[in-house]
Length: 220
Image (cartoon, rainbow, N blue to C red):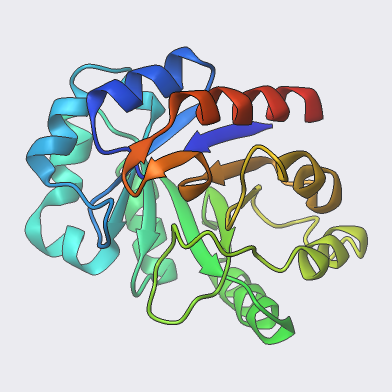
């Protein structure tokens, strides 16, 4: 099971997360208390293995201002977590440019599952590389500490409705105390943690990061 430590704001937290065993770190260029500038993200990426970085972007804005060109051509970043309006055409274009696309969808009820399924059906040969399913909190993109609807996602797995979907990454309210239960119930391909391993928003607590990774290792 892959583990992503998201909302990284400095090199020290990035280095610790990766050295402790995280598969990926998330750098937020979109919004919120963990948003960092392009320059700050570039400083972090230049000091780590760029293939471990997942950069959170607003898809339309990143296309318009050249961020995708910078990420791929200058920084060697190949993984982008997409927010905002994302179309199947965007996925085709980004895959063609060598990106692995992580599509974010807040999930609360069956209507959200139906909408996601319709979107995936429209993608045809080029679906997202991964689906990041998060808690649904109005007006907030993520990092809320709110749990996703585990029961709904558990049913989704057990019904095999998602068997042909891209790999699912579970986010939303995860922490060292609940990640093993979440993994056992939802059976995701990976987990994404942000506020659950922080001392304050944007500052990771290294002991919590270590504890989270230890629990993930025990759940595989």
